[in-house]
Amino acid sequence: MQIAKDAVQKATRSGAALAEAYLLSSKDLSIEVRDGEVETMKLAEDRGLGLRVITAGRVGFAFTTEFSASGIEQVVQQALANGSNTEPDEYYKLPQVTEAYPQLDLYDPAIRAATVEHKIKMAVEMESKAKAYDKRVKIIESSIYQDAEMEVSIVNSQGLQAHYQGAYGGLYCALVAEEGADSQTGFAMKYGLKFAELDPVAIGQRAAQRAVRMLGAKPVKSQRVPVVLDPYIATNFLGLLAPALSGEAVQKGRSLFAGKVGQRVASQLITIVDDGRLAGGIASAPFDGEGVPTSETVLIDAGQLKGFLYNTYTAAKEGVASTGNGVRSSFKSTPEVGTTNFFIRPGQVTQEQIIKEVKNGLYVTEVMGMHTANPISGDFSVGAAGIWIENGQLTKPVRGVALAGNIMELLSAVDAVGEDLEFFGGKGAPTVRVASMSLSGS
Image 1 (cartoon, one colour):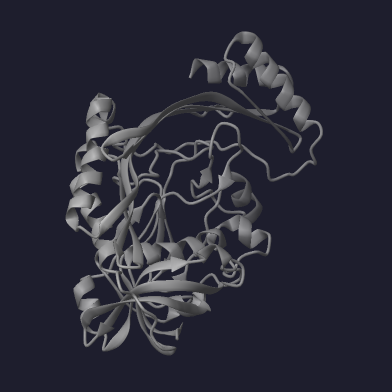
Image 2: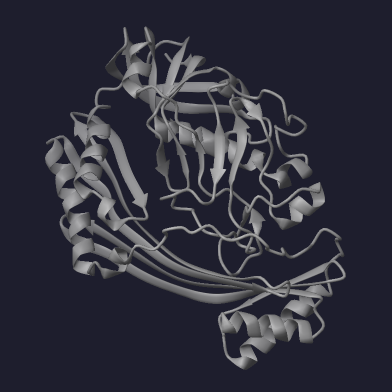
């Protein structure tokens, strides 16, 4: 905090009208095992300061990993020099924070307290339980334990001083099941803030179960049918919406939601939220990359578009308040508009109930080519795999089919939302059923 204060004072004394110092110290551990032995173990530490200065609407930015007096002096001069070469923009401001930051439980000391041997043992156990699940599980592609700790401090010349510490841990397993000439993949993962909630047995078994159930998969004929999206797949589609719900995309004319605030854009069963203070959320923090308190922002409420996500700059441009979504990937970058814990709010029904009501349809467990979808028009055409539903029962595995449509039409056609909200990193969704979709097959 003192280093940050010194940088801000030096910048203002050197002629900056406004100055902001962002300090990040992080530590990442990754352990990958194969055949019960550690294959790779990486421990990476990163520490640095990013400095923003604003004078007469001109923004300068520079960063350093050198915290000595001369290092701070150098980054101040570099930021001022960079600022003198930029175009002035009246909307560049630094936040003045008057409200209190939320009190969040983000640091579990058990993550640091657990020995490296214990963490290796978790990855080994996940691998062995996945193999033991079914003799057709032949190859474990990845069995990984990961954790990270971070400490963030922000000081600006408007009187803002903020600091927090956080940590998370996670497990990831990916594998291949084989039967005859047929091979199918499966994966499972869990990332969270509490070390005690990581369950290597459950993750290994779930990855194996997902691969084994797809053995013998074949295409079905082309048709229009109800489609049930597994939480992971619903989260994939949700990821397509994230850029379109930023104020920046709207201002640049790159959002399919532009001009639609107050209009119905989805089924009334769909409520989409970004919540930077969500209890247990992996992307939760008391403040964003500019020191603005995080908040719960309902973007789509019962199908109606309510608004967008903003950082300080895009909010000033729009004449609204920042939603606390000035996100930084590191101290080496300025705050862009981004999501925190971004999810579809769960409904009341179970996944079993949702499937039970389908006479003929597809339960989608995998999509390929989501990166080819157009985030501006919302059009997509993706390869899909899953399990066929007949008379409310999951029957045979299906592969080699494609789903095509538009994300807006998909959202509008949702006729069931499950209670089983599951997060995959900072994004999450429950099971979602779409009343009818075009399925291209054999």
